[in-house]
Amino acid sequence: MGFNIKKNDTVLVVTGKEKGKKGRVLSVMPSKDKLLIERVNIIKKHMKPNKKYTQGGIIEKESPLHRSNVMLMCPRCGKPARISNMAFEDGKKSRVCKKCKEAIDQ
Image 1 (cartoon, one colour):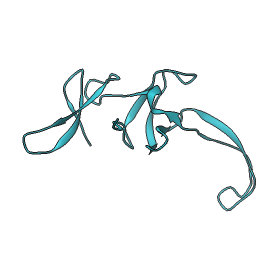
Image 2 (tube, helix red, strand yellow):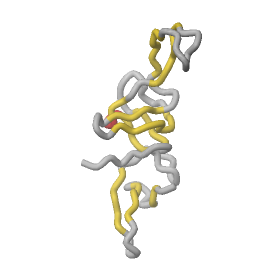
Image 3 (tube, one colour):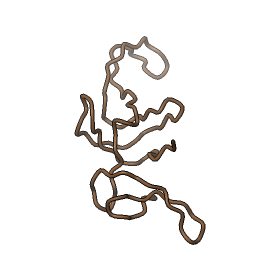
Image 4 (spheres, rainbow, N blue to C red):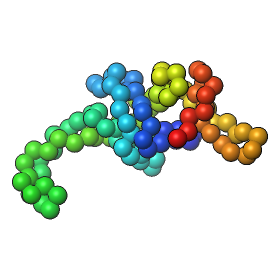
């Protein structure tokens, strides 16, 4: 099964404790079927001082979510929608919103 969500897409969390939150995808991990979403699924992690965190202490950061728990937001209709892949006459492939039939490309 293909991975329809890409970096910098806007997604809506549809299940779990973060249900209803929207965010931008920071990174995609296709091997694990997980996504890292900005300001969603925040965890607290105890860190020793290092070069990045010279103070150390308790750090808040995003934790990955499974891709089945999110839906891609269509930029045109603004609703969460399922996505299909479509090939156009000129040979280009694109992701298409199944609700409004609009191509989702940046």
